[in-house]
Image 1 (cartoon, each protein chain N blue to C red):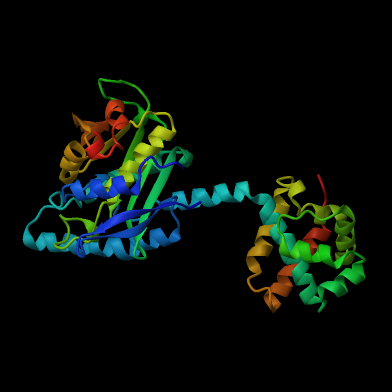
Image 2 (cartoon, rainbow over the protein chains, first blue to last red):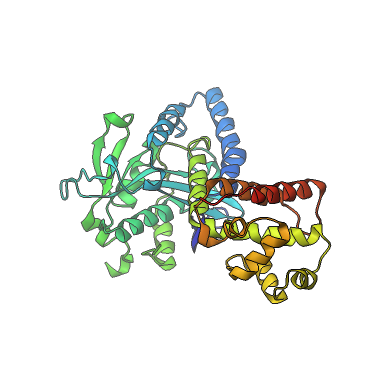
Length: 215
Length: 169
């Protein structure tokens, strides 16, 4: 069931103003329709354009290989209730989506501070193509990643996992997770297509929601 | 679900964050792996609210019976000798569990067993999958309550026939 969690601010880069977005737990057919009817054509168009300009798909974070492989990974999980899914909507559109899992083999920490401690694993966090600086020349909304990662940290706190989360970043987003979110880079993961694995440790999570001036 | 951040905190962080990509894991290029989450939630909802679904069927059933037989609530109440207020409640409140006598009188009117009508109440949840499946099929075929189309009339008659054949376990 799709449930509104709260209204949250999302920054419109074009107007340089915050707009009110809706953060939901769960997805519905409208979100799927947006991804199929609005996201997918833009990805396809951009990929075609990349071919003509000689850009690699990894340069624009749109590699099909990752997706085909990731689809199989998600489909392999028999119990859909270990997953939680969140969507961010603004201006009548799905702006970002995140799938996390709360249990299973991926949900154990690799961080030396708390090896094997349980965590929330982010299977994917994907923003709409029109919000992605590598994909379009004038990206629209900024903040979708921050909002959804903060939601994952909240979920980890609620599940008594002390805010620990883990994820495999796409190459173009590593800086975001390392420097903006403050996660620990635990290196390339050969089991995950060579993507780098990051974790937010419990000590980092303890200060995660404190305003900068209060730190 | 409790969110541990304020919108002020979000605004300050979003303003401070570098304008870079933040995509994780597999980039979503199509919805095929996501459909199962919509479906699983639907399944979950079906399982959780089966009593409501069945009451919704009773609500539709009573309403359609009246439409089929051109009866007002008062007229049907008078005919089966129950209170009009209770019939109104059955049609309006899907969670309402009718009194045993009302169930019996409705059953007599439809010429089916009381247990068959009772099987549509929340008390009978999950006791008979055949009834659940038939009831949901019937409810799904009933789109417009304001008029009884020939297809709805056929669906209603089939469902009443199904109830007439109902045997409790």
